Image (cartoon, rainbow, N blue to C red; front, side, top):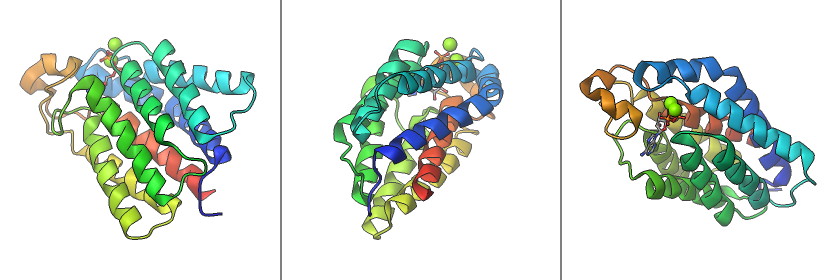
Length: 210
Ligand code: ADP
Ligand code: MG
Ligand code: MG
């Protein structure tokens, strides 16, 4: 019983897709302030394609298979920076995901996703990107798993750290991605990719509470 199986993974991605769709204009508005205003559209298009693919294909049998569908679909349907970054994140997560995912496995998964994003985008903490949400999420997941939390508790810790990390991007000056073209003028706005990361991790946590 202590573990998150394929049903959890499918619910995660369905909840994430619904949350992204619901927050589409808010995410694009964040991107309008410091980028080109398309992050909500990019993510909504990608997740709509992911959900369509999951509905159309025979049900995946492992958590890794679910995450692999997410990865390949996001890579092929999300334009811009976020597609390959999230695609790599989900691909790395797919590779390390056991079925079911236990508490330590949640940390392993979040850590692998972060490593994929850094390998792909070369952003550091403080560059005002999604890395600023994933990094505290991975740290919080490790601490929660070390403290003996259940998988749902590890996700909850990761999600709340990601949300705090997203808020904490507001005063930062962007050093990577399109927002970096604005220089000092990028300060005072929340990074859209950090915000979408917080949404995705919150959906994982909600699915784990089911
Ligand atoms: P684009 O900037 O190509 O329009 P999106 O708007 O979909 O792509 O995504 C922008 C988000 O991508 C940013 O808010 C940031 O979080 C993330 N991002 C951009 N470049 C990098 C990078 N090198 N490393 C990590 N994240 C990045
Ligand atoms: Mg954009
Ligand atoms: Mg764009």
